[in-house]
Each structure stands twice: as C-alpha cells, then as structure tokens.
Image (cartoon, rainbow over the protein chains, first blue to last red):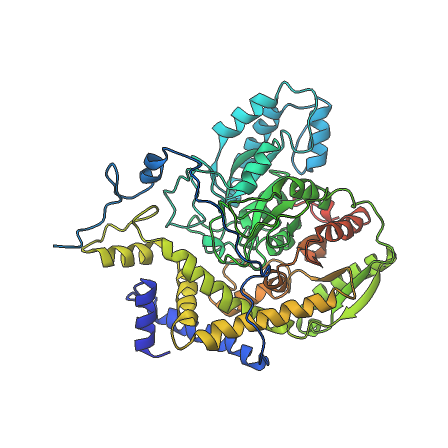
Length: 93
Length: 483
C-alpha cells in the first residue's frame, strides 16, 4: 500500500490518518490484505458471487405512513438543528 | 434466598410458587449488578422501565415462561428512550425513538429489561477490549477477557446476575463469549430473528440470538425472539416451531459430523482432548460420528475479513456528525465536520475495518477482493449444503483455546481475527449454530459448537440439551469454582 493509495482510501472513508497511530494502522492494513490474499488459492471460475445467505429478492412494500409526529424526537438526536432542519456549517457563500 | 445463578426455568418456578415477586426479583438483580460493578458488564441501567413493568406483573397468579424474568440487552439493540451506545463514542448521546423488534418481542413476552450490556465497539472485536466504555472482565478470572463482541451479556449471565441476555453474532459474537464465559448461546439461521432496530455492522451476516445458562433457556428465549417482520426485508416468513418441543427426544442414531479439514493438530492440546471427550459423550448417547468434508472451510476467515469490512464501511458511512451521534467541536467547514467527527468518534479497530472495507470496494480492487470473497462464500455454502446431506449437525470446538489475558492479543489484529476460526463459517453460510459449555482448562471454561442445517435450530438445541442433561459443566459457576 503506497502513501497515495492510503490517502485516497482515507479520503473516501472520510477519516484522517494524521496522528501518531497512522503508521501502525497502515502496517496493520498491509498485514490484513496479505492475510486475505489466501483467497487466491480458491478456484472460483464460473462461480456466482453470493451476496446474502438467503438469496431471495428483497420484498417490496407500500410506502405507507405508519407513525406520525416523530420529527421532534428524531431532531432531538441531532447535534444541531432548528425546528425543521439538521444544521451544518454554511456550504454556499 | 439468592437468585444468583438461577436459570429462567428455576426463576419461573419461584415466581409461580410465590417464593418471590417480579419486583423482589428486580431488587435482587440490581443488587447483584451493584456487587459486580467491577466486571463493567453494563453501560446503562433501566431501573425505571423495568420496575414499572415488574409492578404490572406483581399481582399475577401464574407466570408464563418468560414473564417477570430479568434480562440484559446488548447495547447494540435500539431501545426507545434508553441510551444506546453500541460501545462507541460515536453514539455516546444516542437515544433511539424506537425499540428493536427482537427486544420488543422479549418484552411483550414479559421479560424485564434491566439494562444495556457493554460490547466491543460496533460489535467489532473478540475480547471486549474495543469498547469506548472500557473492558469487560471475565467473571471466572478477572485478568482474562470475556470474549466479544457480546462480552457484557456473556459476563452478566456467567456471573449469575441475570439468567438471560440478548446478543448478536456476525462472526461469532454470541458463541465465542458464551464459550469463554461458560454459558450457552445460539446464533439462529440468518433471517430467523428480525434485524430491525439492530445497529448494523455487516448486514448479510448479522443475526441476533439468546444467551443463557442452559440450552433449554435458550430455546425458551428463541421461541419469543423469532417473528416475521415486514420492517426487515431479510426476515423469513416461515413457520416458527416450538423450539422446546424436541429437546427431550433422544439423539440415538443422529449423525453428527466432524469437519475433516479442521486441523486440530495446531490447537491447544487440552482443547483437542476436551473436544474428543465431548464426542465420546455424544457417542454414549447413541449418536454416530461421521467425518464430513468442507473443502473451502480454511478460507472462511479471509473471506469474512473482506465481506464484513466491506459491509461495515458502507453501513458506518451514515455516521457523519449531522443527523445523530457525536459531532466534533473542531469544525471549519462541512467536509472537516465529517472527517473530524468520524476520526474522533470511532475507535481504532472500527477505523481499521472501514479502511479495509473501503479499499476492497474501491475501483480497481473490487473484483480481486470483494467479488472473489463472495465467490468463495458460495463455495463454502455449497460445501455445507453437501455436508448436511450426510449429517444432522456438525460439531467443533467453539474456540481455539480458553479465555486469554487482557492485552495479550489486542496489538495483533490477525491473531484476534483467528479467534473466530470455528465460528465464522456458520455466518457465511447463514446457518444456525450454538456454543455450550464442554469442560474446563485451568479452571477456565471451554465450549462445544453445534452447527445445524438451514432453519434446523430444533436439532441443534436437541443435541445441546441432551448433552447438558448428561453433563454438569453448565452447572458450574465462578463462585463455587470448578468441581
């Protein structure tokens, strides 16, 4: 894993690695990837990937309203909000 | 009279004999919680809610199996108006507006939720050392880990504080701590218990399940935890049998598989000896031991450590410091609100898995890692399908050894990941599997794992119960020591 890959992955993950534990983390990641490279031992030609043990099609349901007036409860968990919205720093000047 | 170490069945008898009332049962439970504070098994207590529920039951004449039984809930299940942290700083202020279906089912059956149990952060860990709220200690020896991620639930049951607890299992998080703490724990078939209200880690692997002192108690809990839930798109709409029905049927002529490819020679030799004596016990009960082949089983751990981090990186992208959970104070713009909230809110192991997951899903690596792992996952599932044409259940040790000292593996992720060597395959294939106490090494518990065929929890429980009726390992406890 070169530094550039690591910084791309960190950016995609929205995580900062700029602290004293960054180096240890990178060497751990390399070790883990080396460990999972064992998968190359398996012959998977013409094998369909399995994404869920159930292999069923997700059910559809109607988008029915079944509980009302929970806005304030949900907003009360937000770090910052006003009556109707989650608040974040200004994005457009 | 003490309620410590009593099973659900024993507590139910006490309630029905009017030896104790639900409120008195809670008084004693909270006293036990207080006496065992040093275990750090609980993050949050629910005194108000549980006493309110108990008072409503106090005047009853007859109690059904779970009515009035105190239970501890893993802090991964959302509980309405009760802090739910998932072991993370990220959710240190999260109070869910709803309750998980599995917990709601238990409460409807009369269980009294006494509190939320400590766990590895976001269920990522096998030792309970990654919790933001501190390590949980193993009641058998406080220098040792209880296992993880459902370590608080396992420790609370093992210490006799509660007769039952809920857990969740993505790669062994019910079975491994059950084994290390000397209790019984079952991960049902994927889809048996609703995942609605469970904080997601790896959605194709996560499954809730019961943890208790006995197999019989696990069956009682499973009866209530299962339901078809429209709110979970992978919830199975299948018949839910009475899981206690089959327990006492003898296991004569049952075919019990052992996996040829599990190389036991590299294991702790006491674990091997213990496993062999478990097999002897099963033979004594008339079961036939048959060797089965799961050729790709040795690839389970590497398969898991691609798939689980991939799903984790996707699931945990929701924690952005905006809608709920932790937000950093260190903000200059929206981008660094995200980055700093996530960097400060997640612990090391969680970050490690998010990074691995992001990497294996990213352009250029997807086919080599993620798709490859999903293909191997199918091979492993096919292997199990074939094996279950020959046998009724498959058994193995639950873990490579007994509980280990705190700190001894936490610096080495691969060694920690190998803790789940025997438990991960059942998650990849979506199969039911349980761990039951099978003996001791240096006074620390060991476990026997029983894996069943798709939706066949009944046979797993039947084999486990027959084993327990003829052994005494599950009746030992840390106070009296091993006899």
